[in-house]
Image 1 (tube, rainbow, N blue to C red):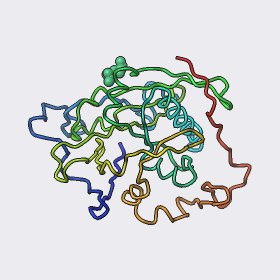
Image 2 (image 1 turned 90 degrees about the vertical axis):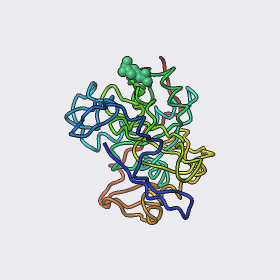
Image 3 (image 1 turned 180 degrees about the horizontal axis):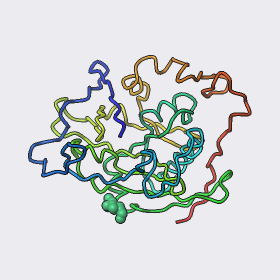
Image 4 (image 1 turned 60 degrees about the vertical axis):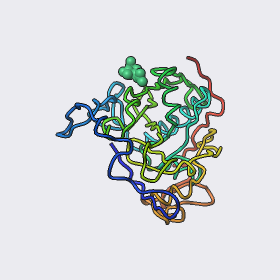
Amino acid sequence: MRIWNLILTGAVGLISVAAGAPGTSPASVKRGVIYDGKEYPEPKHFAESEHNSHYDGRYFRKALREKDQLPILVALVQTYLATCREIGVQTWLMHGTLLGWYWGQKVMPWDLDANVAVSEADIYFMAAYYNMTVYYYQYEGMPEGRNYLLEVNPHHTHRESDDGLNSVDARWIDMESGLYIDISAVRYAINHREGEGILYDKSGHQFRDTYLYPLRDTKFEGVAAKIPFMYEAMLVSQYGSDVLTNTEWKGYTFSTDKMRWVKPDEEDDDYREFDRVDRVVQTW
Ligand SMILES: *[C@@H]1O[C@H](CO)[C@@H](O)[C@H](O)[C@H]1NC(C)=O
């Protein structure tokens, strides 16, 4: 499991990651499960492949080369965003995916996962009406179509962030390859030392709701998407002030001509523009 530490400063109205889990009280800690020598309140729901944690164990066939994961990841994000729109769930981009949006509205070429979030009300809605729904998507470049599974973690009802084995509240899974994207719910902290309006997820991120709402409408990988209202402040607090200006990263340079990250030795033919899912055929 990846944990991003948001370095949030009080000065801009954001707050730092608290040592204690918001909303945790001794009364809510019941007899837990032991995992890797640590005690947790709930058993782990999602089972990643033992071969590679970027894959769901049930659908893993083989570990793909990293560059072959990228088109699958892009299609995951596109179909997930399209599905949320279809079922009326407000979802927004977070973390590395929000950064990818900032730089050219795309998944960054070195990304191996994507991060999206929903509200607590929406995770209940998804759990009640859409858990284990399989969505079939077909589009240019993928004429044979592909099935995607929306699975909601039953431990989304455990609000406290001591639930480290279930920090991911739902997953959108490519049933063909087993690759998936993580969906986190953000919840309002109760009795937070900073007062009201503090949202948190179960991986240790916290921020004021004024940084999130009202969500802004935009596009990501050619599909309608939403982002936090104060996206720049969020990115800077999470990744540092040069994240919005530094055009060299992981051996890539950001080209303002091409509006994407390029490798110095990259030929134009090496680059494949991903198919857009503006027109999606879906049946379920
Ligand atoms: C969703 O369905 C799966 C499979 O039946 C189940 O394990 C899980 O608990 C369900 N999640 C919710 C939120 O009910």
